[in-house]
Amino acid sequence: MPSPLTEKEVNRLFQLLDDNQLIFLQSYLKQSKKSKWLEKLAHKKGIVLHSNVSIDEVWEKLNDWELKEILDGGYGNRPYKCECGITLRYCYIVHHRKENKTYQLGETCLGNYTMMSAELIKDITNGFHKIDLERDEILIRYEQGWDLPTDYNELPLTEDLRTQIDIGLPFSSIQVNKIEKMFQHELLQVRRQRELDRIAQLRMRQSAFVSSSDVSLYSPSRIQSVTYEDVISQHLANLKLIREHEHRITYPVMLDKWNDLQEMMKNLRRGENFDYSKFLSRMFELLYYLKLY
Ligand SMILES: [Zn+2]
Image (cartoon, rainbow, N blue to C red; front, side, top):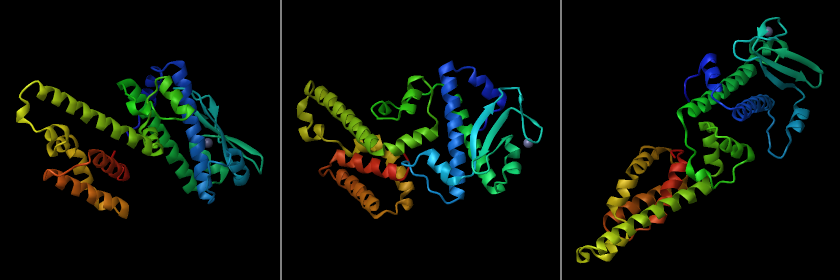
């Protein structure tokens, strides 16, 4: 995560966006903050959020302070007033269902008027701060240029993520991590296939080259199968990475896969048969498992 931008820098970067991008980003941030509020409050009360329960039902159950709206007066303006009288750029409108009370508050006064615990307020404002960092990251990536990973085009992304791509707004690393996790299986398949295609093409080019020169120098099996040097030149960094983190492999199935992978490399070095597809599958599975990809 980049360091937080100043309000002035955020304002400058916001001006680079077109109307669609600006509206989309602001609504994404607002939604993220409302969800964060709900999540922290539910967590505090020991209520587990399920995707099959509507937000409204959760609020019905919580019967507590709900974040209804976040108003932003804009850079350099303080058009709102906190209950305490201080002027505000950002104003949080909170409503208590059961007591039917509504307050408009600045961040520092959230605790004073709602009587929510200091610890909960801290959790919420920390969450808000992380969302601001996410905003900064999106803005910085927008200015510096960011390429969507090509293999995301094939994924059945949610409508919001699809819109974000269509209007040309970069994903934050939080969004990328979510996508990687949600589509782990699909991405594994796509990436393994791409790697196999790449090697197949390489082999084709090599055999074309060989057949036009002195064929007798090469045995056919050597040309068609992958060599120890091929694999090392392509994947040494990944293998080293797994080695560095092998102490974190605790799941027995994954340990077996790691042992298997090492055994495969030894066998390949000895010139024995090698299943490259299986190798890639093992390696990517371990990278995903260790969250190194
Ligand atoms: Zn106040």
